[in-house]
Image (cartoon, rainbow, N blue to C red):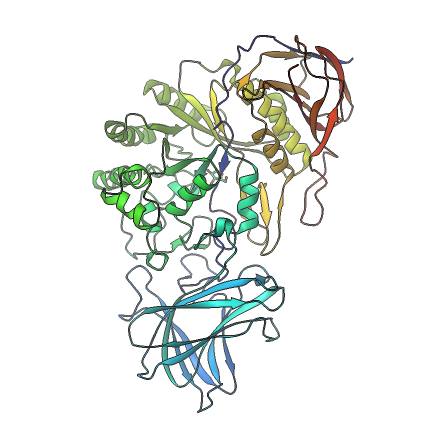
Length: 632
Ligand code: AHR
């Protein structure tokens, strides 16, 4: 054989925690609205604004529509008649049906991507907040149509009554499938109708939850079996955090404050997302905690540290601003873990989860470029958290680079302040990942632990995923230092991309995993509990790690052969094993890309009957192979 792989018979390697591999979720690439958040209406509360994006107007994705000869005007206003102080703008429809009871004037929403995707026979929950100046009430008709105006559902007939805001709801059942449907909400008679928070949700969300998640996307994330869910970003979290707590044009602000994202959805603000689009907060902290629980992942929120990174590099010296953010962080811990009788625990209970969420880890800051300024503020957060919750793991970071003076200084400070865990981020070429397999071999075992919170090889081809997989063998061999790792980013809507590569792609009706999704899934579903020390022929393109699963006693031999030649290998396990092993292989052309129409990189399952204390196995060219070998 050209290669040898020798496993030590003693189980003395590092313990691998169940939380070793997880996902990094950021609301980037429209991950939430138009993505994981199952809401089908875009700009449902008419809050889009040029401050979010130059192309926006308050009626973005809405068009006025009339039928039966009705006439009218549709205007977005912000006046004393508003729904509430956070959801300030609403739609004022002035309609005239000219005496025809069937005539309607209203607005039509075009959804995301090519429109609203509906399935024949599926039920969709429509709701809207409305008020009318007509004493006798105003008819409100909701329906689905295709772009030519053809009905795609039996219309839902509601009557709005009274000049105070109330919620009106009902169900639309799609009579045909479409990926270009539009939602129409239109008034009858003559008069003025106020409309806000116009919403359409599939009833079939992940776990059937109201205000829930798009099922195919949530299921793809769940299928990874992630050990943790880091949320809600990224640059999204720390940018803008040096600005005033209450921005002058409140409630429109750029800093992400978790309190804006909880409570009834119609009372949540919308935000000018750092990535250049309006963000509804319909997916908020409660939903993220609940999703983490639903998929068995440890929740890992990240809060701003008042020093910004991501090109801003601003630090604030305002002690009052710092105090408020530190208090928000303590309140967040109470929201997650406090009893239902505590102030913030009561809010969690009101939202439907009286039991605590069991928060154990929290990140403070993301990629700050000013290590000294960052550490001065990080320690304020950390010390306040530890004073109340000494058991909480508080995660710092090492800035945006994998090395260099800022990185070195950040680590020096992290060590000096005996930080629990340091979040490292890097996006590099495939060769870097092949060459740096031993990066963590020399990290101080007595220093802070590493959370590799973001990494990816910078393209979306199989060759990139092979390099990442090779690198992951090094992470796992060093699981005593690298306690957690997540590829980034997680989600991308293919029509609204700010960052690539990404792990899970989608449009309004399809979703597909990238080649890196497949490698991540393979690693996350085959972690094992303890590393068994192993040695192999040293080569940047032939990498291995071996773990043992405590429950089954199986050895999990994980080998990456990142070269175009097969790798015939003598495997020495140093113990007797059952001959029949389960093999999962990912392999293909390094240039291959998974697309919506074709996913050439997919796992192939097989049985290998030749496992033994010593056996030979030929690892295919450009492959990742996991052998699960049972004890005798
Ligand atoms: O993952 C995309 C971005 O990369 C994150 O927002 C940021 O933390 C990093 O720079």
